[in-house]
Length: 100
Image (cartoon, rainbow, N blue to C red; front, side, top):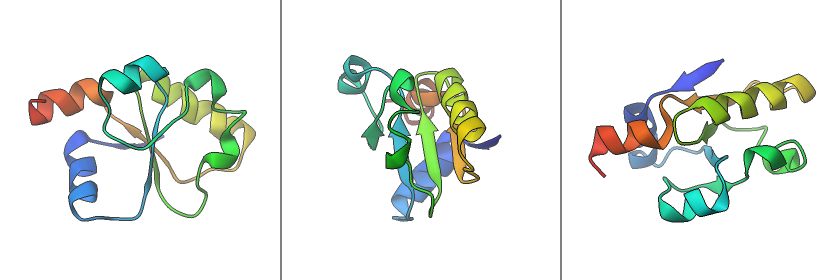
């Protein structure tokens, strides 16, 4: 499974690179704090797979990196995605790295 660190993601954001960011946490979690991107809860990820880009990197995140791993596994089992990246440590790592 492809992965990315919080520092690598921040660099991509700062460089205005072309990628898609997806938060697989629940709506209330997204509202409390998020890095940005599209919010698709884990339980909806297969039903909303058409919203996941196939032509650029897609970085998927959650709170600790576990639900995002599950989301990637589910997507890759059903569809031929090769462009999915898991944010290691999720929003917890982001907060720790950038003292949010």
